Image (cartoon, rainbow, N blue to C red; front, side, top):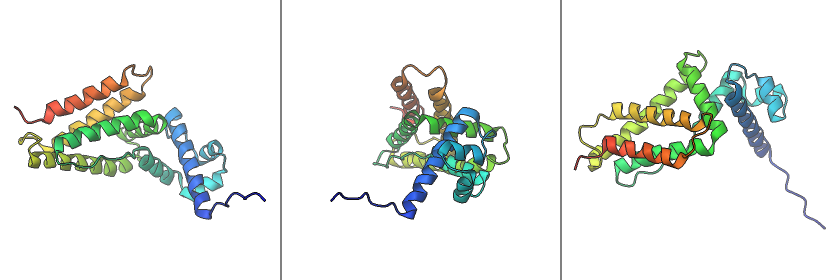
Length: 202
C-alpha cells in the first residue's frame, strides 16, 4: 500500500494562489509597466481567472500595493555594535537582493519610476514606504554616531536620502540592458562609497 500525498489545506492553496498571482504580476510589470496590467492579464499569466485574482486582492490598486510590498522585501542585517558596518551591510544586502530577484527588482523600480512621475495610484504607496526606509537608514546613522563609527557631524536625515539615492540608482544599473559586466565590483564600489562618506576621519 502506497502513501497518498497529503492534501493541501485551504490556507496552503490560498498562499500558493497569491504567490503565483504576485509572481505573474511582477513579471508583467517588469516587462510592460503597471498601466498595461489588468486583473484579467495577471490571472491568465498565473493560470487563473480574473475572478480568482479579484477574490484574493479585491482590486487592481490592492494588487499593486501587494506587489510593492513583496518586490521591495529583503532581509535587513542586524546591528552588531558598529553603525557604519551596519549601514554598509544594508547597502550590500539591498543590492544583492536586486541581483537575486531581478524580475521583482525590475518591477519595483519600474513602479517607483511611475510613482515619481506622479501616478495617482502609486505615489501614496511609495511615499509611506520610502519614508519608512529613510527612517530606518537615519536611525542606523544615529547608531553609528553614538557608537563612534560614523563621523559626529553626519546629518542622519540627509545621509538617509543619499543612501536611498545610491541603492536605487545602482539598482537601476544592475537591471539595465545591456547588463553590468562586473556586478561584484559595482557592489564593492557602492559599499566603499558609503564607508568613505560616513567614516570617522583618522
